[in-house]
Image (cartoon, rainbow, N blue to C red; front, side, top):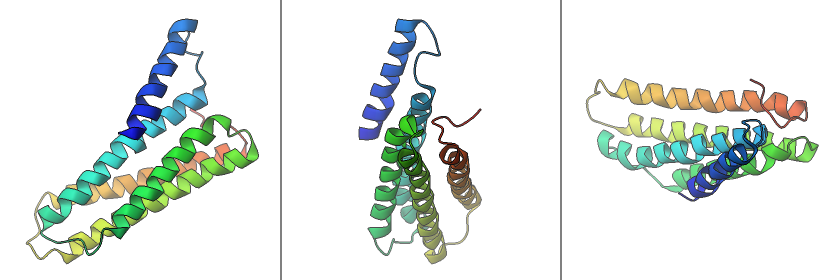
Length: 168
């Protein structure tokens, strides 16, 4: 909720105010708009999905999690990645901050990889008969991992070229 209210809602309202005041969609920083969108997708949607999955999947699969430490690690890595990206992308033309954007994507990929591995272990420990819906959950986990890898691939040129904007 903190990410949503700060980097999501407040930043989005600021971007909309800039558009309205200048009567131009080009008024706000495009890098800021991209970082805002990233914070919304990963910070609101991503963390929400991860939290719901950590809460419900062990119950659905009737397989307890061995420890909550991986879940807290996933949360910390993801939160650090989101915050780094939101702060560093608008300023990424400076080499150090461009490196932080790259680091943010690496942290997010690590978080998603650990999340997928952790939930994979829940599937492996489950003793219940396999259900038809499980393929959907597994495909969703694979898609999330693919999205995190793609995110890293997108920010490598940003870092390499000292740019603040991921090209169209």
